[in-house]
Length: 234
Image (tube, rainbow, N blue to C red; front, side):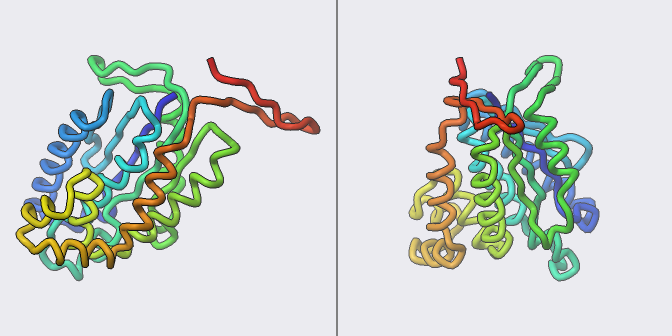
């Protein structure tokens, strides 16, 4: 069982050349950091503004997606009013949860159900104003709750300011408030205020729920005119 993330930058063409180069360098650096944070993580920036990630542990998928989104939303741009879509939404993100047929980092190949799910779900997202995050799992029982979590957390992140997004990003990376204050050059009390304004406690609760889910225990199928049948995965 794997989780994959397919994501693209919202309104990336509104950025200047210098901003585009700086943002891509930042994303590549972040992907390297995540490689050390999550065992087996593999992330790549392709097609200019498209990101793909793979995680052997699906429980890490939501945190990883939010780390990516808050990083992009915290990116400073000139003439922000002309880049409102970018500043508001940052990224559109789809998480896929399922099996993988090929995971070959040496040959740069990831192929299988999970990546198909995230890729197709990203392509199916509508206007950013109707949501920029979705989860598509092979677990029909979990799917409704996972999608609800994605929609609600996404709405909170989209409402965060650039500075609040910075604070959320470092919290998602497991820095404490004193460490964040030092990194951002502000008082700990200011970090706490930004955290509260961005509704971190709600995001944290959603993450704790997601990270305690067991994506491995049961596989199940719905058969017409028959009850749900459960089979323990081996």
